[in-house]
Length: 139
Image (cartoon, rainbow, N blue to C red; front, side, top):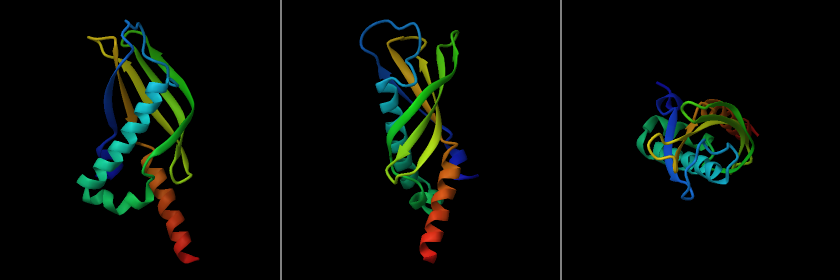
């Protein structure tokens, strides 16, 4: 099993500002964007500590997302209050990658929502980082 397949999604809950919501926050919402960054940073840190296979690739993967731009909805399911999003992530090593995440209201408490970040973008990002390191070492 490849390291990026072992943990495809990570979730988190945030309480919204005290009023009943009828739909999930927008993809570009400040709190949503902040949670996406936080999920990435925490997840990469956890993988570095818990997965020996990941240690091989750790140097090729950025440690955190510094900016998320062009956040946009791909779809919205009104029945389950789920918004699918795409955006461009800018990392601390000056690389960028397209990312995907979802935002969904909690079905029991609509003052809370879940953010799940897909980590499928890690494989090409790691490959790119390894190739850059190989080319740098040859210079």
